[in-house]
Image (spheres, rainbow, N blue to C red):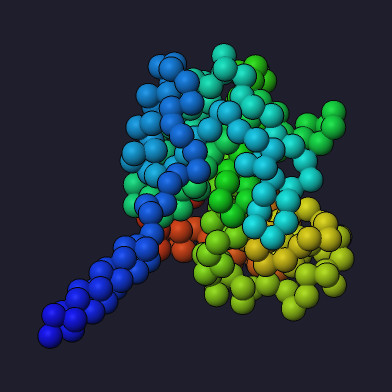
Length: 271
């Protein structure tokens, strides 16, 4: 009998050890905040606690380029410390203050990289923004941002919101509504460059045209122009000869307003 109890105790001990061995350790964050001891580090830590996003001004090329299945071919360079506070203010004004809290908490990227420069070699990125499935990089954390004219900052606004939504599209294809897809051409590759606007495509001609880039181009267009500017431009019947641009515009605006409580046109109407 004593032997029986000894065997049972041994088996219970083994089972407990196995259970303990199968219990995983808590997943540790890939990054550590704060990255410094400046006043703006307090803001970055507060945003992490609120949105669970890492705003990094010190990062590696792998942090920027890695995209699960491939890598970016250009580079991003760490922010100039003298302009980090200004860049955080830019993010607050252009993103955090215009998107509803619920939308931000479900769409904000895992990491936001503050870069002084994004580009390849000596060529600076035309937009200064870049996105992957987990990252949004903003390449204006240097002296150039303060030199932008109001018109240039509005253009930057469109690029920013396009890049923000590009990251979302990469992880959630359902953000492109079926009503928008229904207005797409049967084949983007067969649309001639001269016929893009006629076919309701506001994206410049390139070999990467698809329904996602078509959709993102409308986000860029809407958030960088007032409604009056659009009415006097691409929404004119002389330009939008088939009415497809207006139909796509209406779908994009109504989808974001009804599904996410985001008024894209209100963003474009801002000074």
